Length: 369
Image (cartoon, rainbow, N blue to C red; front, side, top):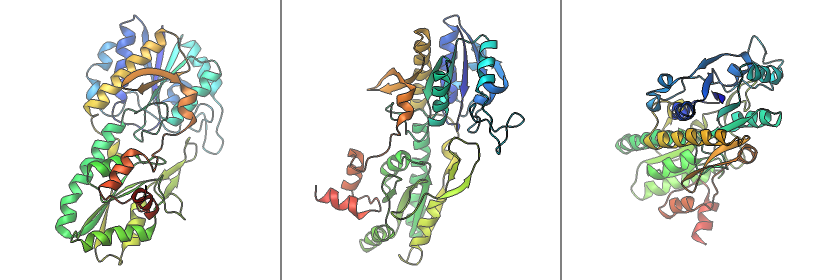
């Protein structure tokens, strides 16, 4: 076989480990491998590099992706110049198919999150043999227990929460740490629990200003003159919307979130007698070396992608379920986001140790269950 690989969407630790896993397992089967540069842009514009064993040696420990990536290159609504523009997106799926055929490819491995895999599913429905590999630091794909990149991002977020504890306690401050998490709050939830956060704010549990203030004041009355708030970027109040910093035309998900932590600081201002400080982690969570778990998981994903290719089980995505690797349909993977349930066991565990979710309704239901 001759296969192509691309990495799409936002970068994250573990992408290179997947590229390595797919390439090395393919080469040992006697296959040829090429990598498309910058996600689907490389497929549309026929920009690629041949991958050999030496090309992928040693990259398992490197963050980012040696192939480059793009979260705006959509073959079905192409906006990148010179072939497209943000004002007039073009459907360039036919040139993408032509490049696929002209290069003599037998299959494409698309590594990415919801947007990348949605495009992969569209290509598959039009006849392209595709295998998907799930990547998102938000851990929000429902067809797999975990996605690579999440553990690395979680480690960064947890370390940040750990570090602000000492300065919060020293200065009697409220420290607000903003993590990534657009529609699913897994990073904030687990970093908040692991770092001993006092208040955790998630997209799935709309917060109430009065309940956040009360949680801080209750701690103060108990002699704890500092508080740690961990907030996902997609968190919102019961009456509010997500905090959008800008809109990027041509992106599968054009909203760029960020800054909700400053809203939280503003609503606390002058109401607790404590100074609030904000730490926005942003893309720090995407960078750096992958954790050992992500290297292990990504390697397993890459090798399983090779197994699916060998069996010609196209239209499938590699999945990690019950601590084993399998394949599921790409359609099922992008059909529904995996979000935090307010009644999940780990949410209940956080409530049991006194963590607030900025919503007394959740706390009251837990107490009365």
